[in-house]
Image 1 (cartoon, rainbow, N blue to C red):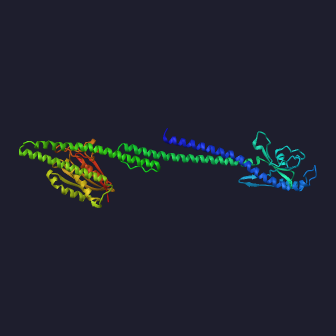
Image 2 (image 1 turned 90 degrees about the vertical axis):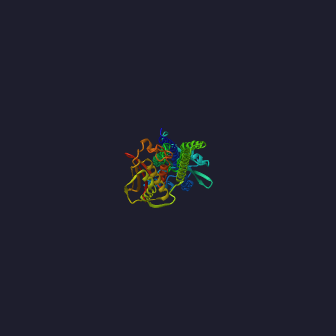
Image 3 (image 1 turned 120 degrees about the vertical axis):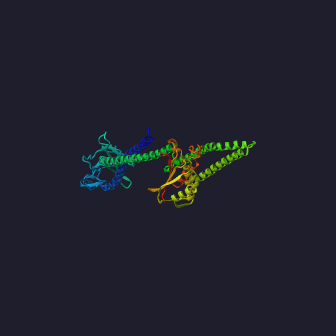
Length: 478
């Protein structure tokens, strides 16, 4: 199962269980809460009416009733009152209180119900019995035993004369009159719960998609890093961002370690040849040799020492370039002018090999950069072209403005570069045999040029030609 589906399933289960419990608690609490509120109102009403009934019950003769008394007339007038009230969208059109009064023996002396039970003995009913004992009296009785909504709530209050209990007044209210309010509240709670669940799921989907997207970005970065691609660390928030930064640092350390190992192996290989030549020539110089041979061997030692010195200087320069994050002394300058200066500096080498410089384009284009570093890069590119250009051939150069970049191009007409070697060009200690003598360089010249281009926000591009190789030194235009 994919990560996104697992996260969404887990979120759905947790949210669904939580919503079920919350809704169950709300719905389960609505009915008891409604009954509690109804009972509270009935207590207040019963005690109020008990005070109203006290004078008439006090004046009632033994064995009599409250029929025709002021209290009875008031209750009858209450029952006859017209009512049409809107209660939060529900209409109330009936008055639902039933009021009955018993004397101190529990005999009914007044009943406002549709079938009055005057004279009935209610002394055993819970509401009357408990109130006569001085306790709180209340009961709930179902009209239909199997239907909870048919329940009627009875709340009693004592009718007193000082400390003497004259009787009990009970108010009854059918629960069916408040049932519709309970049902509406339950519907609203369920609807709100459904919307809450939908909203929670929407949030869960959004969080899941965001998490999966972030994890996939992190995975793609890790895969590309494992393939050797140099990409910026993805900007992710929170712990994923910290993980991405840690992965970037780990990649840099591993890359640095791998690069150091490769450099050390390549450097060891490069040092073997000149050191072997120096060692052999030095051993021969210990022998008694003719003057010409001694001078030849001494010259070989000097040549190899010079080769080693040049390699060390280039390594130091490359290391310094790699430690920089931006050009040290950036100014606006002309690449064409820098190229002309380097061609002039190497005019003797060009003339010695009979090379002709052919300008294909010389457009006025400026870049912003370090003149010394750019001159070094162009010098190395020219040296590489000179090493592979056949004697008497043409060296094509151009400076062009293309969109937002400036292209400096050099093309020789040498043997070119095999397809397998093109991706390796610009890496330190990678080189191909020179056509003139079969010797190989150390590849540091092109590595320096590539590093200078990267330092200035540009790139070094190699394009095979027939014959030869075209090198594009591309920098952002100023």
